[in-house]
Length: 304
Ligand code: NDP
Image (cartoon, rainbow, N blue to C red; front, side, top):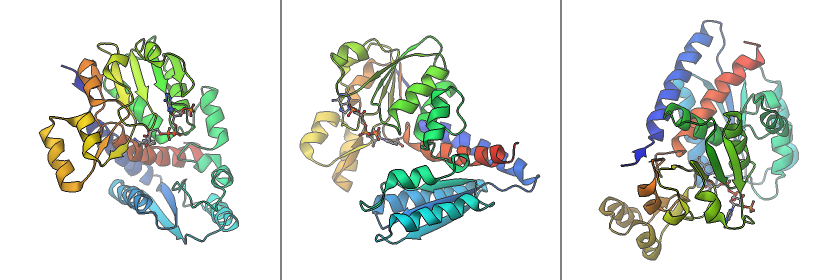
């Protein structure tokens, strides 16, 4: 039977550690602070930001939620970021993506001080990661490494295959695996004979954004499968393709009209040695690592 890697439990453990770190920083009169910037009224973004602010409160971090109207322009956002860069009570700046189309997201993210870039998306932090001396690593990739390490999956010398090369997930997760001495292969939409490559993986990380894309025959028996994908499916045909015969999910589908599936076909999990479920695998780590990065930024900025 494959081992299910319980991301929710690992995230809870990390949050407890951050809360402890925050208590210890309080003895030096330091309270890590996160500024969360939300532009417009995208319902999903509102939920994400609310969860982040709520988690700050639970763990004892200070947070400041700043909302701007949908019509905000790039100059306004750049001026807000400049102000947050200069505020001493703010250690981390998070600009919730996606931004409305009229805004220059790249310019805004690049304006965040690298020391306060708790999403790890600034080119300076991407460069540090590439150079093997990460300060603030992107949250979801850092969460993937925490899952693997805390589940005692051997990384040194393992062949890790990452499918996806985005700046947010694929590339940084590959760099972090390399830093753990894995032998890393990065695949993307132009990779030839993808199934042959993925079948070589001891650890297969899927960050593609396509439901159930990694099928059972693309997986070596006993491999560790890390599914970063979050895809919502809402037709019965799609449901049956991934979850036929799964009574629990069927009930959820009937109730809500949709369910989430990852980038790995659920039938592939049966072949694995260990896997992250969707939901409840990689997803919960993202906020936990954001909190961890904010506490870390607070220490690094003060040379602690
Ligand atoms: P992107 O769309 O930015 O990148 C997708 C990557 O997949 C690209 O590198 C693309 O290749 C590759 N790809 C697409 N089609 C194929 C194919 N047919 N064969 C091989 N590779 C392919 O997505 P993200 O990296 O932002 O996100 C990936 C997934 O992770 C999504 O489902 C997203 O929702 C989820 N996600 C989950 C998070 C979490 O908290 N759990 C956080 C962030 C993302 P190419 O570069 O050649 O186009």
